[in-house]
Image (cartoon, rainbow, N blue to C red; front, side, top):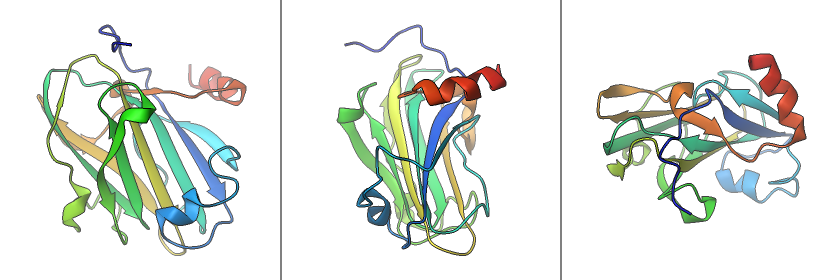
Length: 182
């Protein structure tokens, strides 16, 4: 199906987390028996950034749609503690994603240039189209953070704001949280 040409962000993106998982590699999250169907918790974020210094031994998945405001080339960055992966689809379908950037060890909050692999190649995106985006993060112990930034036509490098985000994959658990935000 073609992307919706009238798409606009709803101001939020879905964040799910799994507690009680040791290790610092994204594979420690994705190989856990509770992933992906039984998260410990879920919330809606108003930008593509999670909390800082929140907890230990957890994993996070943030997913939904990014909706570019203009046609053109966009660059993405990811920063996290510990490891993380940034996946972007060529359209709104989760099955068409590819990993475009990652953190192999850890970075400080919004530290975009510690590892060269944190920055994506330029992606040619169309205005007002839905592009599925997914972030995976694995936190061990100590400090923690997760954020995704972008830069494109008329946008200097910044954390992706809810204005350009929309959640996917919602279920009944999310409606109470949505109602609170409206």
